Length: 327
Image (cartoon, helix red, strand yellow):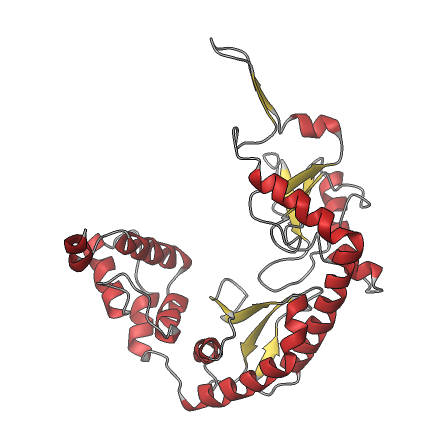
């Protein structure tokens, strides 16, 4: 990050904690480095803002990541994640009023009323804000602390279970209630495991390879997980056994073909053909089992993945013959 800063850099960003792997960036080191270069430091605490402070209060050793760190100039926190409020009322916090002024908008140079807005959204419903206020008043500090206590217990037990399971490895050192894990042996297909877990009522989120991060499964945990830990462990054991019996990777030639495609030269017809080959064409419906699709997307370069998924989104908005007839 230090090497990436040049005379055009205005802001660096640290995660507290990151969604993908649940790890906490070294905020103090990043903020110190940014301040020494005259650059702002934003902490993306959209996930962790309503988790980490309560874990610290419960006794966990959580490094400083907020305005207690010199050099942190702004922070973001999503109320709709672990604040448990409806979407639409997230917040951005600034170290001082001078910085905050740059986020506000005023316009008096037109023939209508003078406009003053505190957000980029301009006019918006107050419903989400009111709902957020109500939820936070209802839960209060002690409510959030109790949720954090239950979430912490569930997270520790699930992550420990994953770490003790043969053929699996937890990526990095998760600090909160999110984690990612990979298969360490080829006979365990991580995407098939996701399908098997889903068929048993447990959702994990496949994440594709990106730079140094291999294909993995992401889990997000919360207080309600604590009531179902035994069910989860039993379902996980069954899913592991089933996945070991049913690998689903495409053949090596197909994967190599997808990996070598250049998204800048593909035509819409070629995208349609690829989608059809991945069982994503025609009716605009996702297949019940996604392992083969996920393998193909994982083999593709990120730019190609994006174009394939955008093409599939287009398919969803094309009415089928039967739907058109019904209309």
